[in-house]
Amino acid sequence: MQRYAIEIDGKRYVVEVEEAGEGRYQVVVDGQAFAVRMAPPLSIPRPAEGIQTPPPDVGAVESGGAQSERRAQTELRAPMPGVVLSIGVRPGDRVQTAQQLLVLEAMKMKNPISSIGDGVVSEILVQEGQSVAYDDVLLKFEEA
Image 1 (cartoon, helix red, strand yellow):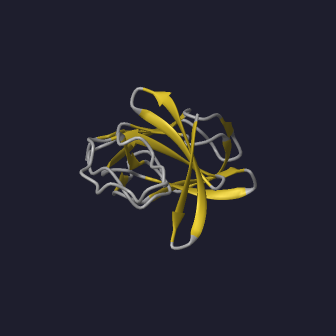
Image 2 (image 1 turned 90 degrees about the horizontal axis):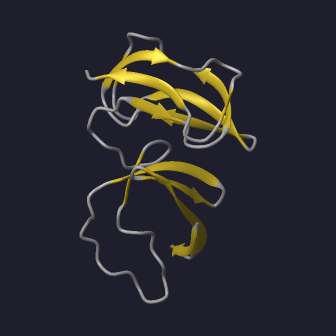
Image 3 (image 1 turned 180 degrees about the vertical axis):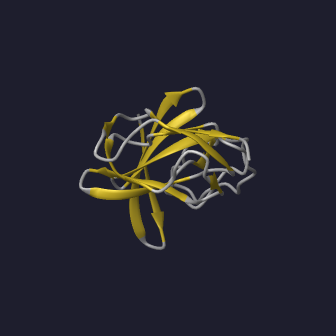
């Protein structure tokens, strides 16, 4: 696992990046976990001296973040271990990018998990109250 210290507007953040295989990364920012998928490298200006940045291939955040991929997803995987608190969709539901799909509790925090693309829910593989491990498949989708 790689650890980085970054500073934004005078506030320091600790960022941990761990490769999870198949172009996926587990990123933890001040204790909040995100599942991240590799995207094409961006042309970003060089950071100020002394500030470390994550690898350039760490791309779109799958859940809990501001960036999203617009392509259709086929599976939603658990971005962290936790307990499924609620599921807001059913098989056959049409979902849109950034729509909240379920809530996962991890380390006493409620984490809304959102869609990274448009699609139709084809299968729900978990139920409320179920414990899940990191990278478990939670939902499956078919293209919209």
